[in-house]
Length: 66
Image 1 (cartoon, rainbow, N blue to C red):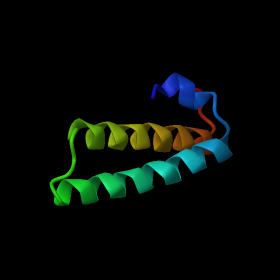
Image 2 (cartoon, rainbow, N blue to C red):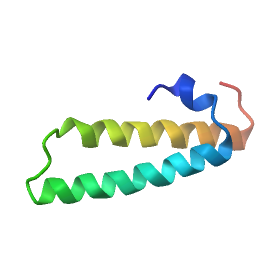
Image 3 (cartoon, helix red, strand yellow):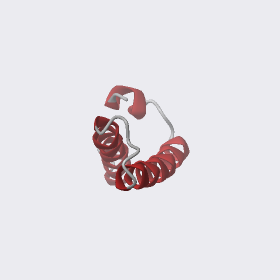
Image 4 (cartoon, helix red, strand yellow):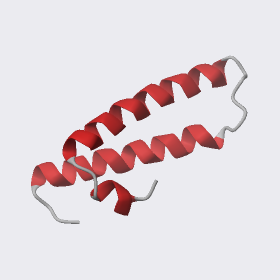
């Protein structure tokens, strides 16, 4: 997911997206621990998406434009 797409979302949508990404990371970590994770890059990409969401939320809370 690109930051440009995330910036178009409302704050409530971003909070929901953040919660779903946290949940997905938990599932991916569990799959990795049980050796059932088919694509290890999926975990890395999900973490990056979460970081993008949190960055945009932080920018909005500080009143910065992006």
